[in-house]
Length: 594
Ligand SMILES: [Zn+2]
Ligand SMILES: [Zn+2]
Image 1 (cartoon, rainbow, N blue to C red):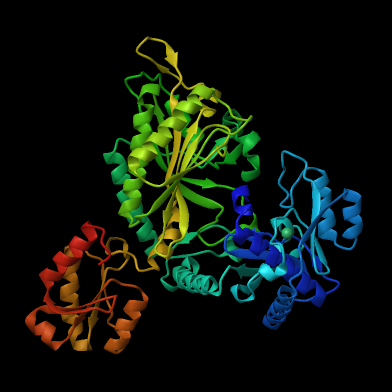
Image 2 (image 1 turned 120 degrees about the vertical axis):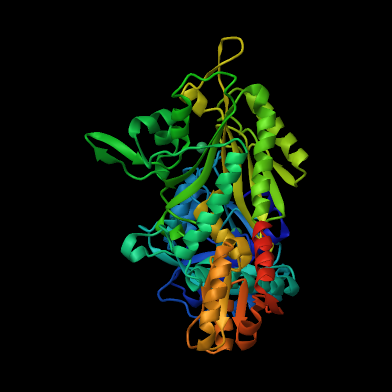
């Protein structure tokens, strides 16, 4: 958690609310054990080891007690302790003892190593004292009891590791005002309606079946598969039109490759165990990069050949703990829309300009209009590559952001060790930010693989290498797309664009005739020839979020028309078939909603 957030009022409020909640829970279960309770993006949580599962009634009682503690206006006081003093204070709190041990070893409360050895501090209010580095509000009275709500209980493994005990995590939210809380709850209700896991099942787009086939692995059903095809088809043709080459690489590679690339050193924890093939170790690929580099290195490259833009829809496999898997958003196998740019120093600024604008162009095509970019620069100490290259690369990234005229923030020192990068986030229909594109310089792999090209001077030179993921992964992007549109995809992406609804059995033949003409015009059409009443058929099509419902009865059959209803409920009335074809084709061509 970045320091800038720690000093914000909301951070202090949420952190303090977590303490007050832990106090209330321990009063209810004096034998209970407390683990960690950080503030999070929209509230806070605390993990507990309790003798029985919590009920909704428990949460109400905990909330009531929290109000009393808030009304008591107790002061939060901080003190520093030695490790031994802390062990004595938390003698019967096993998780805290483990945290104290970690603090002694230089790990923070999230188990991450910190450069400076942390000082052990506690915060106390009323009779509750917790291991904590703060900061907090000054008094519990500064919390607004009408702006705090306990949301839910879920299971969470200690330290997120499924080999550890399962704890009960109480999520709460806390704001400054009751109005903010209400707005938050409204946003949440909206987000729940759009949940891609729910819509994925309702619209039969994809499934995940962990019991039978393992967690974090996605089955793309026909309708989801069609959307993915449409997304890829559009993107691939845009790539080809913009100077990219499409390449393909295998799913596994010999250990020697991952040794040269360094992945077995710095990325091993994300890789699956190797398999043995004729006495040699092969690994599932966690990234496509080394393969693209092998392609670059397969021929002698001249300055005239550059830039190269290798693009691949490459399926990679990365280790994720079972506890953190989440629908399409956090998976174990996914397909990146990956590309690697190789260019000369003099081409680099232009190449960066190009790639940023290309990303924006594609993202805009999917209906995203608001962007935020984050530029991460050279980290202290551990960076590879020469500082002059870092500076040139950072300058090119920032200049490109300025020219693209999108809002951006610089995160100084937040770059990975091998190069600066831009992360591009989009805002969805309900204002949530999602990170999709990354444009990442690499000063490490060109060295490790000794990438060169022959310059105009006849000498060997090192090319610039840039990794670029645009939509990110097809799985995650699909999740974002489902939630952004709430499942009501624009016409060009809708698996079924029009549902023909014959009013009675005798209109089915005419419906088939119309469907034939629409299919010839390239539209995706189905006929609901079930025995349901018309109202029911319309409701079913609306539930499937089909853009156009075309009702046909006696009048339409006689006049050769169709009665058009939009999924927005708008009724356009009877229209000639050709007029509908023009309208739908235009919506598809312009990637409009309807
Ligand atoms: Zn605290
Ligand atoms: Zn890469």
